[in-house]
Length: 286
Length: 219
Picture (cartoon, rainbow over the protein chains, first blue to last red):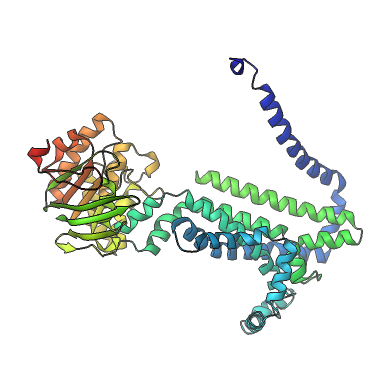
């Protein structure tokens, strides 16, 4: 009866709390160090820089676009993987995990090589043509942003590099989300006269709302932090393809630690805002 | 009417072989059998969620064996009701009619009539989360009935209800049958449900072969 003694669980809780607590301490320590290092004047100075303001704007826009694109891929992929058994399914599951497992630099190099091939070259031309003839470039000139003349080393490369990795995370999130919805309801919808599409859009999708939000937030936050693929595939040209992680890297490389930390702050704030938004909307839904 | 003609259905490792059941319009059939004998599988085959390996399924005199679930016009209430959590009770009743692009006024009339018949008029704005077991089953029943199906299949609709609610549901089901005049096939393992509701009782035995008995013999 030794195990039933009072206090017998103390070593268990002590060990588990100590181990998880040390990780929590590391996170708190990092944030506290950032806070103590940067001053308000450093932050204000960083915001006065035109380059940094451009980088903040490009980050916000590119992350939103890549998160939306991620959802376009993740919703159907997650649904198919969750609901259907088909030949080559485990292969497909593995395929969607590759961007998560690949080293980020390799993702960038692979994208760069892809856009050297004939299909990639075709996409370059299509993108350049579309940007020119749809009036997109006039809009870019009007808001003072660089024109789009292709994909690689241009702003579309930033979005594509972010999307490649973020979509893989979104696929995972959507699959888990659909797994949690009872397929019985869609089956009943079929007996009530729905086609597959109607059952999906009218029954499954409305219930997946919290999952959609979680996947979108995850994709957005991933895109915000994407550095390797962006650096390799889009470059680090100021006022053109520079996003927040690039700014941190560029400022660090010239020894401007204050600016690097200030920009890091912007990213920390964005990450917290995304987490908070996802949680509060999720709770409102419950 | 709903009819199985020597239907063979495979579900994983077990097989339902040569099942023959026929229930006429306005008749209430109860299919009995122990848990795991394939009752649910048979209903799923009837509505098209599972393939029929051989034999035929007829609904309202039409061979529906190879039709898609959406084209079969069979009302189906699965065991847990499977209500749509994002919809209100009224939206549940209207759902099959909206899919059929019926006029708004017609839908409204049908929803009101059904809610009245099922005693859920006061619940129309509620979502499934706030409903009791009996209310959920009434909603699922209304959803399956709203498009006036030729056959209504109920998979253990009363198994999760307490004794008192169950007694009340007997009356609801009898009233529904009288008003809607569909052929009802009600699956259960409870002989008291069969005694209270059935015009005819069928027995499904030992998964592999299905044997069918008429009322009197079974009870």
